[in-house]
Length: 427
Ligand code: PLP
Image (cartoon, rainbow, N blue to C red):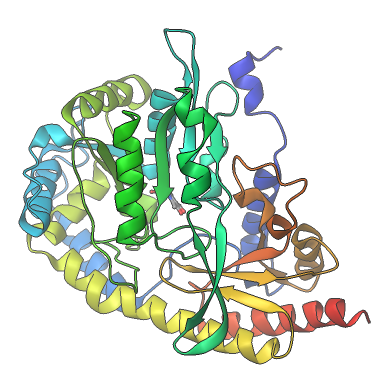
């Protein structure tokens, strides 16, 4: 049996597949594990109650609502798309029509489409890449290209900052000097610019000023700016900084129902200019016939009356902000006097911790912690598109999930403290 070049891509071992296997095995193991590694959203009882109630009414009426008895058209469930058009226009005044929105099976599916649409071989013979203006970035982008890898990324400027008047924090900033002088941009080798905001893995939120500069660069070179809002506003709105969200025809906004607590419904939402939406719809038809309808059916009433926004503002955001505070205070207690810094928590469901001058890489640390029953994710994989060989910072950080119950966060951070302090102390 022989696989094509495309098929072989999926047979290769990749570090991130190994990590995902570890996470899955940990969840199924009998031994207690402090699971600070995954990207699953938290189980929040108040949210679950709303979804349970909505699901029950949808299930009672599932055939009448078309959600399981019919395919939608390839663009996605029309009723949900129309509800989303009204929702975004009501809150942002973007003047969208139904030609500006398509649904996908999760936003991961959207990135597979978008990155293959805007990067790879072009008819004129050029080979274009996706520009990640600030690495580290979401590791799920790394392997989506069907032929080769097409990323160019710019490592960040690191600024030491305070958080709630405390020292010991840093913030990544886009290195605009490097970006504005990037050869690949000048030579037409970039097909689109993409950033997650807030960023997985760091919890960084690009400022409005940074977004305006990225928009200007994208317009200057005639490429779309893709903004991944998986954790962003207006839902799940896991953002603690004062920022705004913009859209115009040169911007592609990607949303997801996953981090509002519905990852199993696999519902992604793309807001873009009509020709992009038409092409995405065609891709849906070829790959899926039509996108999953169930999430759309559950979500429609929650978007129609803005409950999704109220839940995001009043339940989801405060929940993660409290978890971030807990994790920060535990980390600061464990590492008082050590050269350990935390990325300023500005959003998303993670903390990003920098063990400066750690004598081993965090990939090795990951194995040590795994043996002690605590799972985290080491940093190197997140530097998508960066040559990490001579970049020590890329091997000195870890990502911690804060979506777990308090007890798991406390136990996990205690173990990390014990192991890492011994490494720094050389004992
Ligand atoms: N983008 C970011 C930044 C993410 O963290 C994730 C999932 O963790 C996704 C996209 C994909 O999410 P989904 O396919 O569940 O919508």
